[in-house]
Image (cartoon, rainbow, N blue to C red; front, side, top):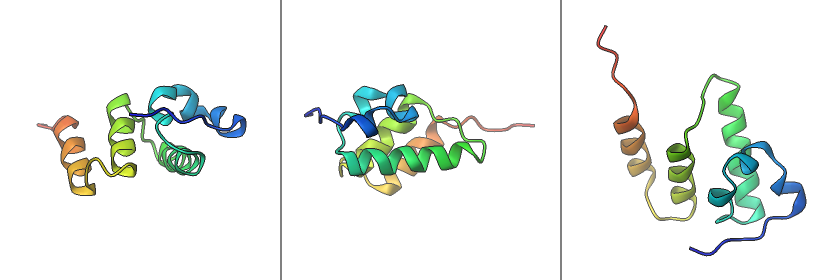
Length: 82
Protein backbone atom coordinates (compact mmCIF):
# COMPACT_ATOMS: atom_id res chain seq x y z
CA UNK A 1 0.00 0.00 0.00
CA UNK A 2 1.48 3.31 -1.08
CA UNK A 3 0.39 6.49 0.63
CA UNK A 4 -0.54 9.32 -1.70
CA UNK A 5 0.13 12.93 -0.92
CA UNK A 6 -3.18 14.74 -1.09
CA UNK A 7 -3.33 18.38 -2.08
CA UNK A 8 -3.95 20.84 0.76
CA UNK A 9 -7.51 21.59 -0.40
CA UNK A 10 -8.42 17.87 -0.25
CA UNK A 11 -6.46 17.06 2.91
CA UNK A 12 -8.62 19.46 4.96
CA UNK A 13 -11.96 17.87 4.05
CA UNK A 14 -13.76 16.52 7.10
CA UNK A 15 -13.85 12.82 6.30
CA UNK A 16 -10.31 12.93 4.96
CA UNK A 17 -9.19 14.35 8.32
CA UNK A 18 -11.25 11.71 10.17
CA UNK A 19 -9.48 8.81 8.41
CA UNK A 20 -6.27 10.26 6.93
CA UNK A 21 -4.48 6.93 6.62
CA UNK A 22 -7.34 5.42 4.61
CA UNK A 23 -7.80 8.43 2.36
CA UNK A 24 -4.03 8.62 1.98
CA UNK A 25 -4.20 5.59 -0.30
CA UNK A 26 -6.29 7.58 -2.80
CA UNK A 27 -5.43 10.32 -5.23
CA UNK A 28 -7.11 13.74 -4.98
CA UNK A 29 -9.95 12.88 -7.34
CA UNK A 30 -10.74 9.62 -5.58
CA UNK A 31 -10.47 11.16 -2.11
CA UNK A 32 -12.74 14.07 -3.00
CA UNK A 33 -15.32 11.72 -4.55
CA UNK A 34 -15.35 9.44 -1.50
CA UNK A 35 -15.56 12.38 0.89
CA UNK A 36 -18.52 13.77 -1.07
CA UNK A 37 -20.29 10.40 -1.14
CA UNK A 38 -19.88 9.95 2.60
CA UNK A 39 -20.97 13.53 3.32
CA UNK A 40 -24.10 13.11 1.20
CA UNK A 41 -25.02 9.89 3.00
CA UNK A 42 -24.41 11.48 6.40
CA UNK A 43 -27.12 13.99 5.49
CA UNK A 44 -29.45 10.99 5.26
CA UNK A 45 -28.49 9.75 8.73
CA UNK A 46 -25.55 7.46 7.93
CA UNK A 47 -22.57 7.45 10.30
CA UNK A 48 -19.67 5.56 8.73
CA UNK A 49 -17.32 3.43 10.76
CA UNK A 50 -13.64 3.02 10.03
CA UNK A 51 -14.42 -0.40 8.54
CA UNK A 52 -17.06 1.15 6.24
CA UNK A 53 -14.58 3.68 4.91
CA UNK A 54 -11.83 1.05 4.55
CA UNK A 55 -14.20 -1.08 2.49
CA UNK A 56 -15.08 1.89 0.27
CA UNK A 57 -11.37 2.54 -0.29
CA UNK A 58 -10.92 -1.14 -1.17
CA UNK A 59 -13.68 -0.88 -3.80
CA UNK A 60 -12.16 2.28 -5.28
CA UNK A 61 -8.74 0.62 -5.49
CA UNK A 62 -10.18 -2.59 -6.97
CA UNK A 63 -9.28 -4.81 -4.03
CA UNK A 64 -12.89 -5.94 -3.49
CA UNK A 65 -16.02 -5.89 -5.62
CA UNK A 66 -19.20 -3.97 -4.95
CA UNK A 67 -20.87 -7.26 -4.03
CA UNK A 68 -18.14 -7.94 -1.46
CA UNK A 69 -18.67 -4.44 -0.05
CA UNK A 70 -22.37 -5.15 0.41
CA UNK A 71 -21.68 -8.53 2.04
CA UNK A 72 -19.19 -6.99 4.48
CA UNK A 73 -21.58 -4.19 5.34
CA UNK A 74 -24.45 -6.60 5.97
CA UNK A 75 -22.22 -8.79 8.12
CA UNK A 76 -21.46 -5.78 10.35
CA UNK A 77 -25.07 -4.62 10.54
CA UNK A 78 -26.93 -5.79 13.65
CA UNK A 79 -30.22 -7.51 12.96
CA UNK A 80 -33.43 -6.16 14.45
CA UNK A 81 -35.10 -8.98 16.36
CA UNK A 82 -38.00 -6.93 17.65
